[in-house]
Length: 163
Image (cartoon, rainbow, N blue to C red; front, top):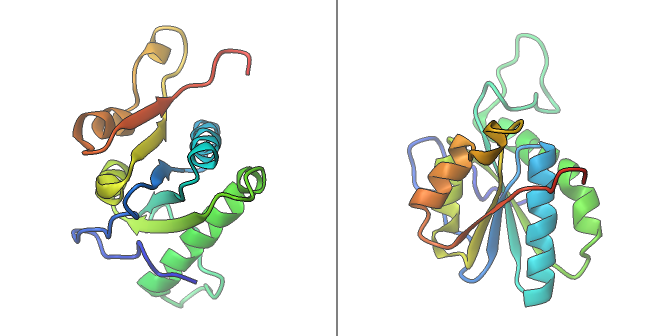
């Protein structure tokens, strides 16, 4: 199991391979749609995908060896986040068996994680978090920051109503 993407907060994350597609995945249905879109593009272009999940101690699942009174290590939390990411995205990945996929659990804020990992990528794909009629026209804070600050092209995906 790779430990890429497990750097402490405040350090620079290693970039995804040049020419790859980076996609953010937080476990939401918007993230599932962004992942499916990224995998479809990667399949057509014959390039790899790097799926990134940002995490903090507050958002990380408990490590497998967690028990009351035991303080899990940073690496154990990172491994638990990466395992959850792989499990959450397995169904989408099976639909594109020829696409090479790498998974990264990054201990940092979501926008910063995605911007750092995607700096040499061909494209960054993120889901839109707009809700409701008027709010649905707005970008979420992460997608907005990525669109403004990433050095690669950014695709913000949005499902059509009724899909």
